[in-house]
Image 1 (cartoon, rainbow, N blue to C red):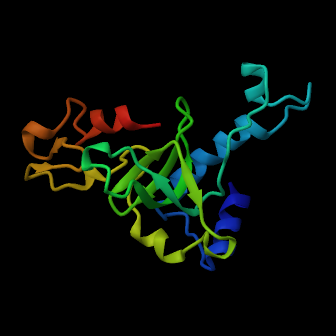
Image 2: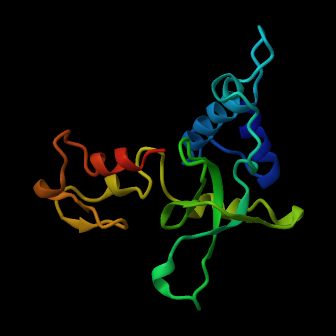
Length: 178
């Protein structure tokens, strides 16, 4: 965790405080990396190899890297761009999709285009993105007195939008948690 945080700070040229919104993603990603790449002392095999019988070979970006991610927005038509700029925060556990943050929240993609070496990190992008692992679109921040339509279509706030657990948007966030 400390190494990833220090690397992100060095590449962006700014200090990453523990209260920053990317920290929960950083903790999640650190665990993901350990499971796939850190060998155990007994047999020298990784947790991934023990479970799947082979090493993990898929592409991984550096945490906090800005790249272009292909979105699955086919409804917009063939003429529309299907690539979106985002901040890489990890990979999905089950589908192995790239997870990225934008100003709209969490996005998922199977394809990525990396930028040139000197353009891969932007300090400004760290402040513009939104979303947490437990609240991918920051829906829980909605005012509890009014009912709003969230980015994913979930109605949050008010008595009708509150889940049975008492946390606004909790059930929806739980389904999206990766």
